Length: 154
Image 1 (cartoon, one colour):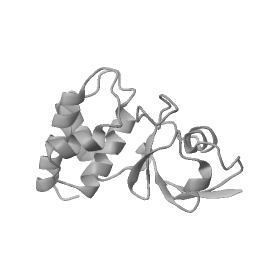
Image 2 (cartoon, one colour; image 1 turned 180 degrees about the vertical axis):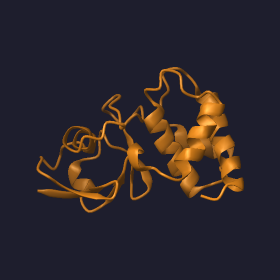
Image 3 (cartoon, one colour; image 1 turned 30 degrees about the horizontal axis):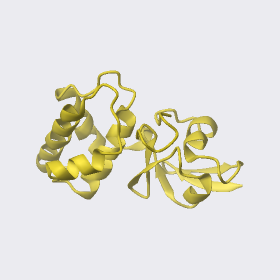
Image 4 (cartoon, helix red, strand yellow; image 1 turned 90 degrees about the vertical axis):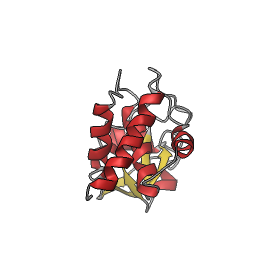
């Protein structure tokens, strides 16, 4: 039995300790906002936060997450509204499949560094693939969210 804390709720999970966290989140806990993309930590669709840091849940074994604070897209509550508003304004989403992972990476970046440079944005987002090629819009969305965070109280 593995004890997990996902989005502030305790979960007792019975699974192989090597099971990827992604499958626990989606199949056992029933939170489907986190997506499966490549299964090799190369696309970022499966991004969640582990103690506030963006990680790829498709390659993170259940055993690593035990006792840690796991946050999925369903529970991001403060900065996400600013990021989502910027995403809409910049018309970032196209097909939308990567958006959960993109937003989770952007939120982790802005939580750690509310005023990132373009290079810092590119580095933080480099592990997220957008099949539609909206990288310039994503960068503009993060810059807009950063600017908006300066004027809003979160």
